[in-house]
Image (cartoon, rainbow, N blue to C red; front, top):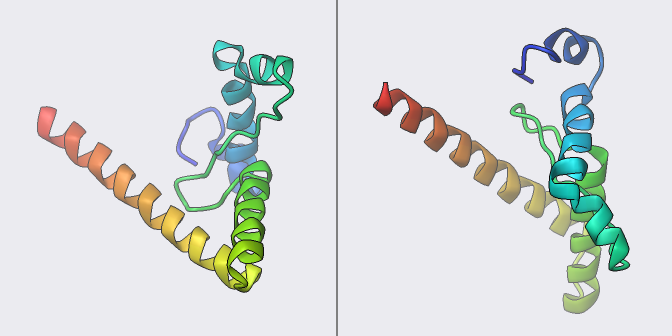
Length: 106
């Protein structure tokens, strides 16, 4: 959590930054409303820079793991753990790339 408007709240409340950012994701270009009009439930995929995932994002990851487990006969908890690890690594890599890109352009 690094946005100035949320830092103090995030210091006191776990996942405050992720939960707070979920609303703008829903509202951006009226995405949630457009999905709802089509009968689709929109769940924003928001994670904090610390690697913590918003509850709705975890819901999506849980659903993916359970679906994969039912199709492959695998263990849903193990698949969820692997999925979280891969997603966390991808987020960290994207953050590093963004920081490096900004550093190179200044």
